[in-house]
Image (cartoon, rainbow, N blue to C red):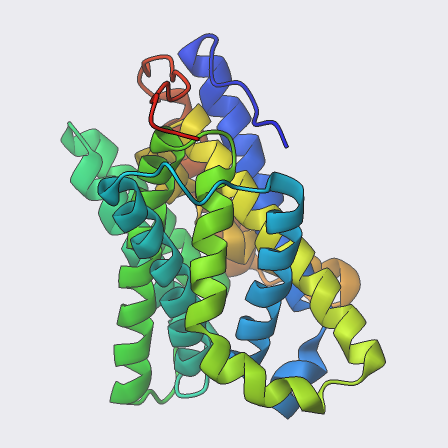
Length: 298
């Protein structure tokens, strides 16, 4: 499987990266709508593990990554990247079990927004994640009774998503094509085996179809798009654009489930889109990425 080229003008690469994040967010939300009953029956950690397992099998078959020839630093990066995927999924769904969905979604996005703020070189750039977070609050409407366990899980998911954002860029630049992504997803799937293996006997034929499609669309495709996006833009830009995730959720809910959107939700969506557009427009020039030329690969 070939990767998208990251050469060309910085502005073109940034907007292409933004488009990839947009499709990724849509993929995540669409996959979540495919199997809502599975989460109730099997539990979110088990479903997350099964989805990761299906995605790992697909990526391994398509990419066929080489196991030998990686340096210790490359293995460490892929291990952290995979662990971030696993923790992000489990912690987020555990948070949803203790706090309202809007609170969990807002806490989750604190991670990538922290990455964007930390990467900002001027105070104006640091304002963009704040605008995006305000938009997320309007879209997700956080409120209601909360539990400290839910807050803790939410913050853990935010930390994991921050690591996911940073290491997507590091692993992407250190590996050839999608090789690093495929290995990292396998690491994530193995870490979640304690959840997925006990649940596997309870999954029937039709449910396996839903799990497989959800894993391919919401994990393999979405993570591949994220992985390519950080090569086109930067971790800072992609982190800000992750705010589009709840926007896609609101749109999917409105179109597929006939959910109504209030005025504050439209305002929040506007803030998020504006923050993402400005962040993309202000993207700085990136060096052209070269393919690894290490001679110690078999």
